[in-house]
Amino acid sequence: MPSNRIERANSELQRCISEILQYKLNDPRLNTMLYVSEVKVTPDFKYCKVKIGMDTDNKTAVETSLNILKKSSGFIKKQLAGMVKMPYIPELIFEFDKGMEASRRVNEILKTLNIPEDRGEDDE
Image (cartoon, rainbow, N blue to C red; front, side):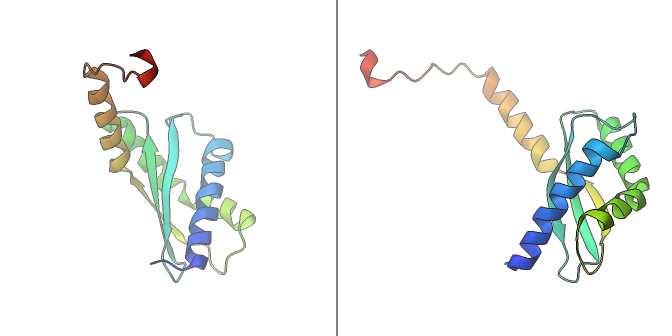
């Protein structure tokens, strides 16, 4: 179980990275529906796994966006250094969040099912 310090760091890093991606990283090749779904920093604060979710099924767009983020990690780290007070700004490791893709597929399947609306007891 992560400590409170790690949990606070994860939360703050997620907030800051999201802000950087949304407002400071101006790359037109990036998917605009990109979001940070999860951040996990190691206990020594040297590495940080950043899971990225995207509202697309296009594998090429996902790979392109991840490559851009990897190449921009130095810029993102520099921005983070000015936003968070940490003993060490971690090395960022970007990954696609496959869990979000699975949930999107489940939601699409549920929309195709013919499920009658639940009637309240007042309707009887």
